Length: 327
Image (tube, rainbow, N blue to C red):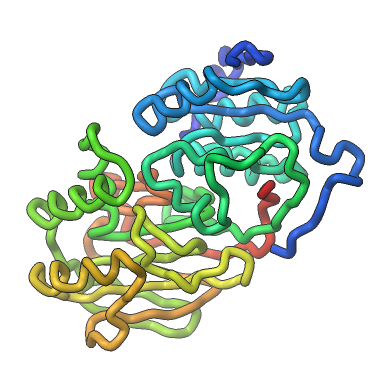
């Protein structure tokens, strides 16, 4: 989230020094290598408090400090403060929302900082794509991958980065409903979110989608623009590669509730009904979407806009090899 300059000036990060017990390159021989100044930025409530519990049991190396996110939505500001303090590797300990906020700070900084990921959230879609799990020794790893990033910009100039998934329409409604569920994690959480979204938000507004030069205008249930393989725990673009310079696009037209229910079990395992007349897949470097009705869009599971924001048009561009990720 964007904060005013006055809020930034007042923000004092709570740095805790060990107080809580693409092509792949190797940085072990670089100037600082695996032991450059590192900060773990964590959401104490992520994964129903799992991040806090794990960090309390962790023994951190001498070059690693902790910086908790003080309140919901403050992850990007916390990460910017860490960059200003000279940290060059920022490890996002939490779910996809925490990773999204820390990545936005690094990408906006335009420097050479590296993102690390400690997956402790509900879905962990970005970590899944890169093969990162919560058991790895993330502090002494030296391999870095240059991954692609997406940038969305609306007709009114609002813009933001994402590094895993963008969802329009029903996908955003699923995210909205999943956020209301506090007692589940992972695919069960998003499965129940789908059920609730089908009950409350099942609509087919007209979308005009241009994936590079391939244009389609039709009543639409959803649009997925992915860099990673999963969105909300579902492998909707299982062949996606975050380092290949292309978005994987999945556009679903006016299918019925019954059709969605029929296909959901297979889609949960990555088997997309490609032969369905209202399911279209594409790959592109730029995607433009517009609708006569205001859009609901999420980025990496975090809301970018709601219908009440009045966003009717957006352009999504891919920036190849834009972000360094420690794996």
